[in-house]
Image (cartoon, rainbow, N blue to C red):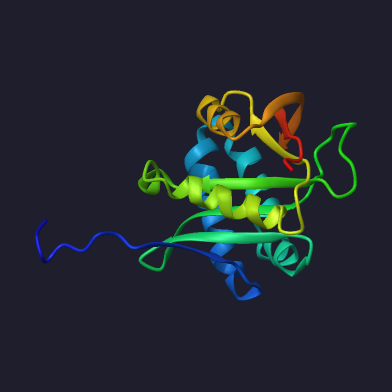
Length: 180
């Protein structure tokens, strides 16, 4: 390796309310990069304005039942995860169940193992008080994510519609029972 070339320095840190703007930005950028071509521009714009606004992100960061993490490369956000109480529309969800609500990594930072580390960070936080049932919603056509979650013990147990403006996406509900 050339002595003048430094490897990328990745790190994961829990986001705080001071990170509202950064988390809002990386949330919108990663959603658009991954799914933006799937929606009419008006639907996408309304979804981003509502879901990733500073007010929406600030409320999540202020919620003591939720936590978010930033994946940074050389101090710049390239991914994020969000976890909290399970809120997916499934009859078996019970109080105390947890949910990985978001796990997004920009393409430029994928395939280096950091998405897996970010995922594990969120799961460790969800299980900080002991094992519990965990849930994930995933787009029905995101086969790579489905395989990834399957390798970690998550199984398809249902489906629902994910609303983006006037568009309804077919999403799968995945679950992993408490491991003890």
